[in-house]
Image (cartoon, rainbow, N blue to C red; front, side, top):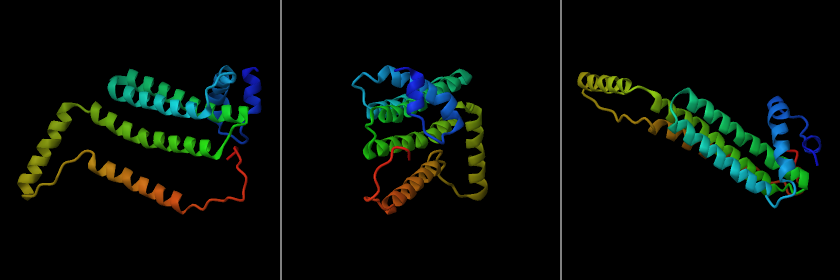
Length: 187
């Protein structure tokens, strides 16, 4: 089967502009190449997370604009793989609630990693002088007020992430499961 036929038969209507005209055509090429193999949609989902982790490593380890652009390109490849897993499941007729939830969970994991990696990169990019001046300002404030406060660069963002995970857990726990409705892969 051609990639154009895979694209037409596995389309989601309605779909986002970026998905319809950028990611899904590339994912259709991948699905047409994988349709006769034993690779499952869940394996593609897990590989998308692995590629996203590579993007995080590139963003944190490669300095400058080159690292930023390379990380964005690799993260976009992760998004193409995310589109391909659902397209392959629809093409083969193997869409399942478990696969849909695994895809959702991995998407949320990537959504959690994105702001964290951006924050870590911004901390890494700052010049040493900025940190020195920050420490000097903290020491002067301590002298003036006589009080010290713990300077933690990660404490407050991590508390925020933990709060969002708690909210997500409560929402998922409180969401009723509708057993009488058949599963639809178009969700």
